Image (cartoon, rainbow over all chains, first blue to last red; front, side, top):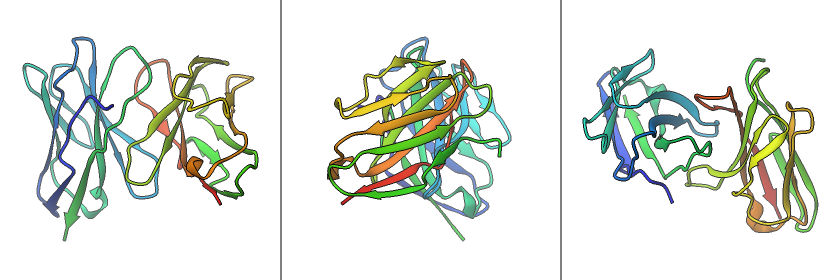
Length: 109
Length: 112
């Protein structure tokens, strides 16, 4: 079973920030927080990852709470092409990823 | 292209038949993963290779499923005596020794 929990769906207006939450209630000290997304009929795509500090790249920002029990993926200016299922995953030294059901984000014009 | 390539993109077969799905990883990526994904679900881990050897095959559902990576590059997922429940999208991913996974577009298997 997945270790993370996410809301099943969210809506966002085009051009606004999309904030996707994730709960990591059982994350351990050596596990990273990874985010992927999957656009319809495509393979998953890596977005960003972090351990304890906030991270930013060209796609998104990742905010991790101090206790590491929750994280938020931020898409600062959502576009229609950001409509996808977003997955957060706790990843440790064990290579296999355990995926949950993700959050289905709909960006509306 | 420079990405992970999977063939065939679609495969329709009859119950009981044998199927092979192929994955060409990104050049230089030592790790290779197979996942399968049913409609509305997240990807489900099947097997992970580090080089030529299967480092973790704990996700293979039963002995009808087998995967090889004989030269540490291309991998083949083999399914014997296919069943309707095997219908899914089979995803392959590769990575360097650490870090993010790069996925292919998947092979959609339909067992009639």
